[in-house]
Length: 204
Image (cartoon, rainbow, N blue to C red; front, side, top):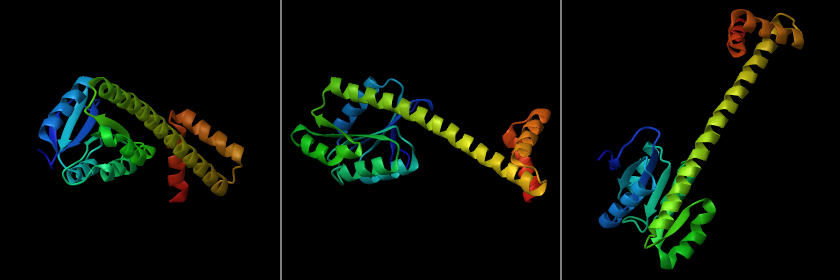
């Protein structure tokens, strides 16, 4: 037990991180078992209340949050809204079949997946496999986004260095561009590194 979070299983950093929020001991054990069966490479953490779950998602990054509604301190809809709004985790709510349609109508538009209880092992396994597939896609998008942001940052620095050369050495844009490229080639450095050096010389 660490900060209210019970770590049921902890694997390597590449595993799927799952937070289970469930107040019933028997149902919690069953959900943990279903998750382990559906996702072989996973790390499962368990909390018992919505309050503990909110602290957990603030402190850790999860790929999926499974809410077994109702919880002891709230139904679970408020928690699901916080998970969707404040984290990148996928959110699943487990609710009794007779109210699943009503709950779905309230939360599905925000991206929460509602699964009726009693749980179908097959359907739950399919839902968890969808979580894994979606996680992979999100990781890919994040990686591409990082590359894009780095490229934008590089372009900004190079343009800033060009402007400094144009301002202080009276180069035109083409001359500044060729100077940067030649310096990078001659010193076998990236243009971004050369740009940073020029900015340091002329702007400090």
